[in-house]
Image 1: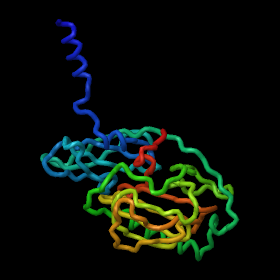
Image 2 (image 1 turned 45 degrees about the vertical axis):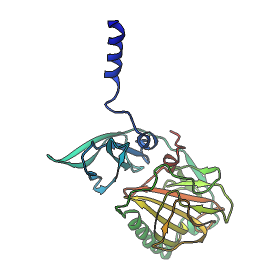
Image 3 (image 1 turned 30 degrees about the vertical axis):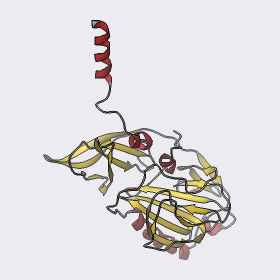
Image 4 (image 1 turned 60 degrees about the vertical axis):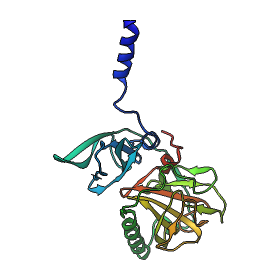
Length: 278
């Protein structure tokens, strides 16, 4: 009788202090361009946490603990990173590990040379538009996201994954910052979670574009649209139509491009729809 009891005790001591909840299992992909989920304990009120000086999304998981959901920049090197939070004793730094991930290359030929090497006039426009979009990505509203397992914005096959090293006419440019879906022009684009429209524009690279704030720095961006069906300030229900698929801006054909941003960092949207591939 003693031996089975000892075996059971050994198994119990080998288990973690708590089992991972659904959100952690879904989102914890700590790689460059990925997401880290960090246990913040179980204080009575939601703790605040920051990473690289910016506030991060904090939610309660399984009524057992608070967790920080942190976007990791693509430029981050594998190794140890830290978030900062407050305890009764004062500020505390909590470490987490970033693993390596290799992203593939993508080579694209564009007939419009301006979209590869823009003129000084267009460069000024691009800089102005970049500042406007960065300001939108950096917004941090107090609302809680309605859901963290996102719905698909469109039903269709993925055509270009996140993080591709992109070469336009042989010249390297910024990595691919979202997911592309191969769907036809005019296909409705639906909000993957409830949110508020915080930016609408027609941009040099992105074409017709909509930003939706899901709460606490979790933001979706849809671009290259043929038609926009919303305006700034609109409250979007989960599944509400923001616009239609198109090929505006720097695009070789109709498709739906979707970015997801956390704490001002573009991360792999496939994580939020349960389709992440290491």
